[in-house]
Length: 472
Ligand code: BGC
Image 1 (cartoon, rainbow, N blue to C red):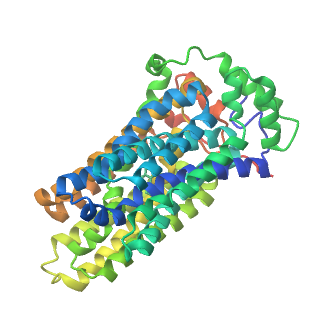
Image 2: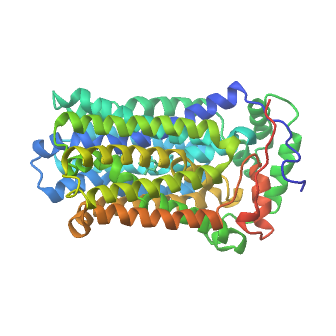
Image 3: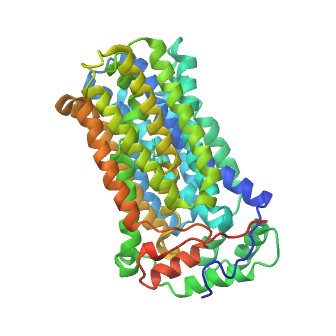
C-alpha cells in the first residue's frame, strides 16, 4: 500500500456527505436527551408511582442496563445487517420504548419502556459514529464523527430545558414524549440514505458502493480510495467474534477498552447527573443555584465540544486528549481541595465559587478531549471486517463503567467524603494521561485503510503519526 496520506489526495466536503453525517449524528441527540431527561422527570415519577429509594434508583439506571444490552447486540447487527439498518432498527425500538414509557401505568411497564430506549441508545451510541467514520472524507473525519458527540451534549442541554419547561406542570410523560421527535428524524433520514460505502463493499455490493462514494466525494475519481478499501478487504478473513483475538487487533482493543473505561472512571457522569447535588454539597441549596448549575454545565459542555469539532482535524487527536485530561486532573484536584479545606475557607461562598470554577473547567476539559476523542478513535482503529464487533466491545465497557460510576457516587461520598472522591477521580485522570501518552495513536488525516494497514503490520499504536491532508 502507498505511504501514509498517499492515494486519497485532496478531500472535499460535499453536501451529500454533510447531510448523511448530520442525519446519523441525530443518534447523538437520542443518546444525550434520554440520559439527561430522567434527572428532571424522576421526581414526578417517584411521587406518581410512590417509589422507595431503591426503586427510584432502578427507575433511573434502567436505561443504562438497556444500553449495555444494546451495545452487545449492536456489534453483530452492524456487521451483519449493516450500519444503516442497525440505526433504523434502533430508531424503531426507541420510538416503541418511548410509546411504552409515555403510556406506562405502573413501574414495571415504565421499566420495560426504559430498557427498550436504553437498547436503542446502546446501538446508536456507536453505530452512528461508525457510519459517519466510513462515509466522511479523511481530512474531515475527526470533526464529522465528533459532531455525534456535539449532538450528545446538545441532547443533554435540550433535555434540561424540557425538564425545566414541564417542571411546573409535573408532566413527566411529555418530557419523554419529546424524545420521539429526533428519533423520527433519524428514522426517516436513514431510510432515505444509503449504507456506508465500506460496509457495502465488504458485502460485495460494488456498484452501490461506487455510487455512494462518488456522491460523498463529489467526483467520479474515487478509484484510488476504492482500491484501498478492496485491498484491505482482500487481506481480511472471517469477521467472527473470534477474530477479535487476532494479534494485530490486540493493541487497538486495549486502546479502545482503556479509553472506554477511563472516559467514565474519571467521573464525567457524576457531574452530568449530579451537578445540583454537588452544588448542594458546596452549600448552595437554592433552586436557582441548582438550575444555574445544570444549565451552566450543559452549556459549557456544548461550547467546548464545538471547539473540539473545529480543532480535531487540525491539532490531531492526541494533543486534545492530553491537554483535556490534564485539565480534568487539575480541576478535580482543586475541587477536592475546596471540599477538604472548606472548614478553613468557612464553607459558604468561597467553596461555592471554587466548585463553580473547577466544575466548569472540568467539563470544558472533558468536552475538548476525552468526550469526543474516545468515540472517534474507536470508530477509526479497528479493521473493517470486525469494526462493528470491536466497537461494540469498547462501547459495552463504556456503558458498564458509566453504570458503575453512577451507582457508586453517593455511596463513595459517604465513605471517602467529597474531597476523597474527587481526588480519586483526579488520580484516575493522571493514569488516563499516561495511558494516552504511551498507547494512543494519532489518526489525523489518515484513511481508515492506512490505519488498518498499520496495525495489520503488527506495529505499535504510537508509531502511527497523522498527516496534514490538504482540504478543498
Ligand atoms: C459520554 C457520556 C457522557 C457524555 C457527556 C459522552 O462522551 O460517553 O457518558 O454523558 O459524553 O457529554
